[in-house]
Image 1 (tube, rainbow, N blue to C red):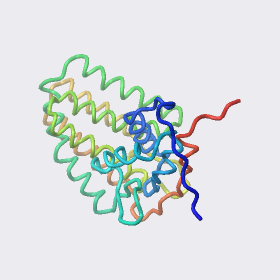
Image 2 (cartoon, helix red, strand yellow):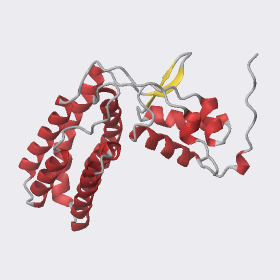
Image 3 (tube, rainbow, N blue to C red):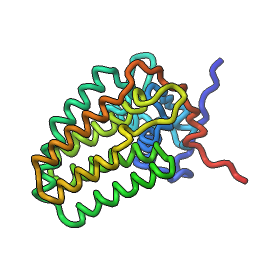
Length: 244
């Protein structure tokens, strides 16, 4: 007989729905929740110390952003992009990001330029420290900062979803089984610096060309046909830290 899950008193747990969402997204982007991982509501509720009814809206929000998928009779799982979906994501990114970088050049402030430079420096530091998971995230953050600085809110929202999906694609197809995750080309930081140089010169045509080449390079290093990694333990990811 299945044991009923004990009710949780949310009044004793100040964690908000936004915090649950942000921690799930961070776990996905940091590659602690690989594509295909089942997101069981009961287990997530226990891990976060909230009721099950608090989990479902968060999963629906993630599903609307194409980060999570719902399958009849199987529930929710971290999205597992197919080869066709992966190619489509990079195709669309090559369509919209040259436009975003051109708009960024028109509108960019000195603060926005410095933000890009800081992001590249952080990415280089992550590479130097061997923290490839953080490097993956910073690679996406660099592109999102360009979108933010462009002022185009609609394309920016689209790119945010695509960057999340790119992270899933890199997790799924960017490594050999059992190897460390890779953020794309080894020269990603150099490519970002070259792109930043073109932006500082106000050369929209060259910046757009660099952007397309950069995205093509990342896609070219994907290894399609990889098997997904095994599922992690949700309680160990989101539960309270053990006391000393």
